[in-house]
Length: 217
Image 1 (cartoon, rainbow, N blue to C red):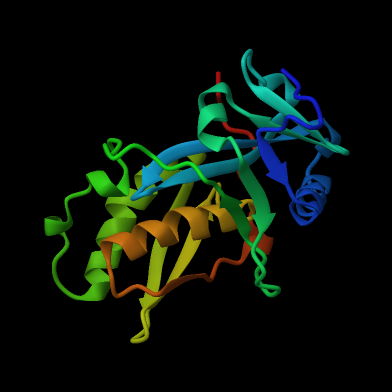
Image 2: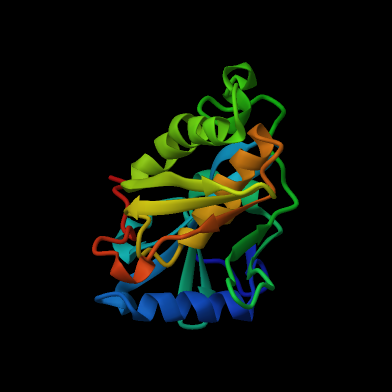
């Protein structure tokens, strides 16, 4: 269903809308794509998010469709209550303006299966590099595998900077910054306290199969 202009579930800033339109313009048949924003399994005390383009035919009954000028933003029915009052924006990092979802809603205290809070921290032992690799393999990669993506550890600096490389459906995807900042980084910081930030070293320009159209059928 479409929402009246003054009764939107999510506020989309001009910066976020313009960025989404720019990403869509690079896709074949981009004019037929709509932007989906849905809540995924929680990362600790915050929701995770999936932001992707799909054909307008993927909109299901009960989904909310917001008209944002030339862009349609779709909130799946199961995410509507979890996103009420949220804002979709871009970070203020001019060199890497990643997507940011400012959401006043939080998950219930009970962790979801497969989320970072359901992971047993006692399994994390040894040097920082080993623990980061374990989180990537057992928490992060199973989640982004649904998108055909994978995150590989490249290095960990003494200052707590983790360098990762994305492949598969995450390479070349215009929404990869969401996966990085609101998925990978959140999980790593929660489970490996030494981690201060995560840097994406991926050559996204060479991606040949970016993931924009998940199978929701």
